[in-house]
Length: 131
Image 1: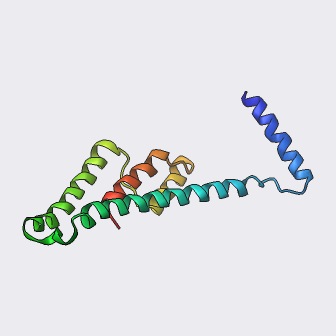
Image 2: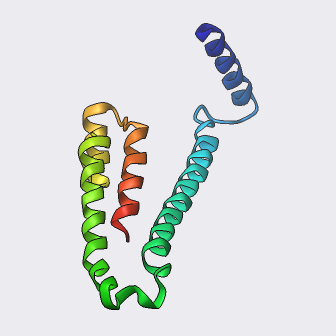
C-alpha cells in the first residue's frame, strides 16, 4: 500500500514539474489547509472564552457584586485557578510550555514534532485562565 502511494506521488510530482510547477508545489495547499485549521481553532478558543465570560459574569447580571455574590468575586478566580491546576496535574500531563520557546525546543529535540494533544490541552487551560 505504501509503495503504491509513493509511486502515485512520484508520478504526480513528475507531471506537475512538466507543467511548470516546482518540486515544492505541495507546500502551498498544505499552508492553506493549516491556515484554515488555525483559524477554526482560534474561533473555537474565542468561543470558549466568551462562553466562560458569559457564564460567570454576564448571567449574574447586576447582582454579581452585591451581598453574598460579592464572595463570587474571590471564589471564581480561585476556582478557575484550582481547575487549571487540576487539569494540568491530572489530565494534561505535558509540561506547561510558553509558545515560541516550546516550538524551538521541539525543533531542536524532536524534529519539530509537537503532539496534537498538547494544542488541545493548551486551548482548554487557556479558556479557563481567560484573556
